[in-house]
Amino acid sequence: MALTDVLEPQHIFLVHGIGKHGTGWSESWQKTFLDRLATYSPFRSATPEEVREVCQFVEITYDDTFEGIRTEWSDLGGALTGVKSNLAFVTLLQKLDSSSPNSSFEKFFWENMLDVALWFGFKEARSAVIANLVAQLTKELQQRLAGTSAADRPNLSNFHVIAHSLGTSVIHDALVSLSRSKVTAPDYGTKLFRFQNLVTVANVSLAMESPFDLDPNLPSDAYRALSSNVCPSTLKSRDAVCRNYVNVRHELDPVTWPRMFDPLSLDPNDWKAPEYLQVLESRFLDISHVHDLEHYFASPRVHVPVFRRIFGNTVGGVDLGTEDETKQAVKIWQETSFDGGSPASLVRSLFDGDRVKKLTLVELIDLLGKFSKLVRIQTS
Image 1 (tube, helix red, strand yellow):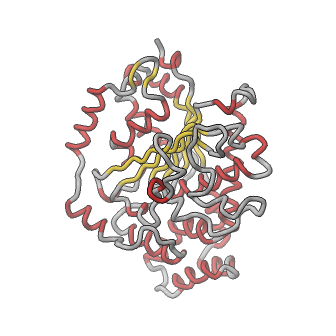
Image 2: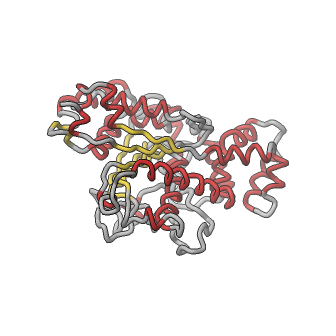
């Protein structure tokens, strides 16, 4: 029996992190996902064409909005003019301006951290990115939901999101807008449609939650990471954008440390298992790549639970990953990865601060610059 006879197409929306991402940016993600999936039953006996048919990846890109602003400003002087009424942003840029010309910090900021600064510190940029994502989501959903009835849409279970790093914060705000704004809520409110799974990898949605009032028609806490409707629930009566939420964190990924996303301890009344699943990993292959999504998905402790959430514990009566297959995957991972040692100690020394404290824009950029000395945090 063909895989396509027992499994309907799964629409998997991919949202990138920090860095420049042109068309086709997700090819490496897709290859990692499919290569790992092919090592487990029943996918290992399926043809590549069958697997591709059931894995319908949807590439979502927002870096073009940041690139447009970067091009418009062209340099630091242009940026200072563009944000002259934004005190926090001006403070950050003045700090850069006081550094030596063409310093490594200024170059690093302009090429990589400007996206973060614009998202976290510049309301106009954040709003433009949200509008960009909502437009892409509505376009893709409209096409992929064609042929389904309004009565069936609330029960669909084959739509998923995987977001990484900065993309976890971006998709958070976009899903709030998609499901609650006056324009799109009539079609994509949570009683009409919700994603089956939201998978966040290296989640920064709490650290980078909006300091701005993004929609005057919504309550002031609508975009707050722990009070928004970006939460899991199978109850149709609850306003939730997904049925299941999988949060993946590597214990040595410093990007996840400031204002760490940990809803089970921060908001235990609303966030509960099994709808919410926290996946932790501590072993690594190369400490400098510990933030990469591909590095995260190399671990069977990460990819197996994600696969089972997306495709189910069984597919066509066959366990997704037999006991022997999963044991072998873990054995290989243990034998080829590291746990602790000097690289881990060096990364841990990067940040010993308060993991709950809200950060200012300058503090956040300073920390990310510090982290980048040991860990690659841009994903271009």
